[in-house]
Structures are given as structure tokens and as C-alpha cells.
Figure 1 (cartoon, rainbow, N blue to C red):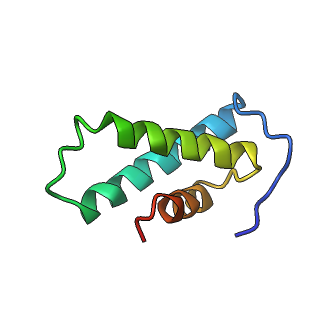
Figure 2: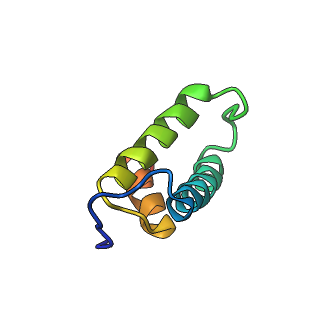
Length: 78
């Protein structure tokens, strides 16, 4: 995974769109892996996912697919 691009502007519309797409795609995957969890009330997991995606974007990862893959790996969901 190699779309590293230092000095990412987190408020750039493209970056925000990538983060939103990555969150949505990752959240669907998380829900599929644990269908009995109450995801509507799991604010800790949502927060952890958001923080991980932002950290990845700050490190230069801006591709939504790569963000999703790295987030799933980091949340030990693989």
C-alpha cells in the first residue's frame, strides 16, 4: 500500500471525502464481522475508527481503499 503523501490537508474536500468513504466502507465490514454487536451504541468503536483514519490520513494515506485496509488491520479485525 503506497499512496503516501506527506503534508496532507485534512480539511481538503478530497481528503474529507476519502475519510468519509473509508469510514463507511470500514464500518460495513466491521458490522458484517460481528452481527450481534449493538453498533448503534458502540461510540467507542466509532471513535477509535475515526481516530485511526485521521491518523492514517495525517501520515499521508489518502486512498479510501487503503485507509479501509489499514484501519481494519489496526483494529485487529482481520
